[in-house]
Amino acid sequence: MVAIKDLSEHLNTIQELNDKEIGMQAIADNINVNRKVLSKWCKDNGIVIKPKVYRGYCLQCGISYKSTRHNVKYCSEYCKSKYSRNKYITNKETKRVNCIHCNNTFDIPKTQSLSSYKRKCPTCRTHYKHIGDSCNVYYFECINCYKLHLSKRKTPRKYCDDKCKSMYKFKRKYHKQCVECNKDYVSNRVNSKFCSESCLRKFSYRKQEINRRLTIKNNGEVDWNISIKGLIKRDGQKCYLCGNDVIFSENTNDDYYPSIEHVKPLSKGGTHTWDNVKIAHRKCNWEKGVNLIPPPQII
Image (tube, rainbow, N blue to C red):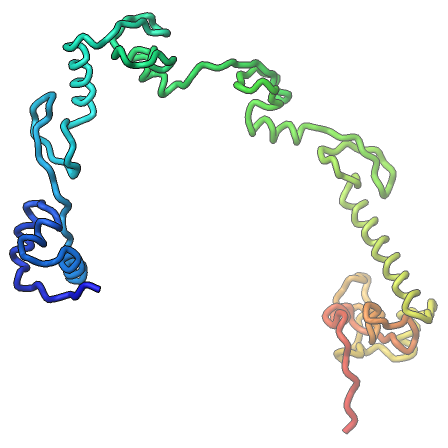
């Protein structure tokens, strides 16, 4: 573990050397401390040491440059390429070839292999980067708009874009027969079973009633003669849950219309018998749900 000591007395020297961009190691050698000690102290005090910068002159254009790499010889990639090209031409180490696209002649190094990419002139090579290599194209007809389109894939596409794909799904028709009324109808959904919402509700209610009657039979004894009139004759017109009178009206869906309420719900094993049913508002019946009402405590 390197011991960290206070370098505050060298602060001005460190800042001056840091402005000269000579690097961490050179600064540490100048003030006679370990490089790791200097790095840790600078980090703790929020001082950022600039990396070492190498200066030189470009071999091609002669302009001065700065770099963090010690082996740089050129100011840019352009000067590097131009210097190499001129060197090959001066030393007569080039050969002339024809571009495979535009047939213009250009020079390449003798030692360079004649691959398909290198056989393109600089202009065509630049376009090739953006366009890409040539490929086969295929025509296909969109099944929605019936227009011809191009594709790189040999396997034919059904649609020219996502918009046509969505439109075709809505346009496609399936001939169906309603499960409820047996009426023939046309739908754009492959899994459609009903011709209307009315038939769907009728089927759902009937299925629900069949399941309810099956539950009643499975729970044990059944009194099929239970009715609202019979319960009112036996218990009166007060809801056994809230104690208020039930209201008879033309609208049987009214919240305060009387209903047959099972004290012990059928889903919990209750029976459809006279000793397990009482009169209750439709609203109170719905709010009670499948909960059990505890018996009243005798004080």
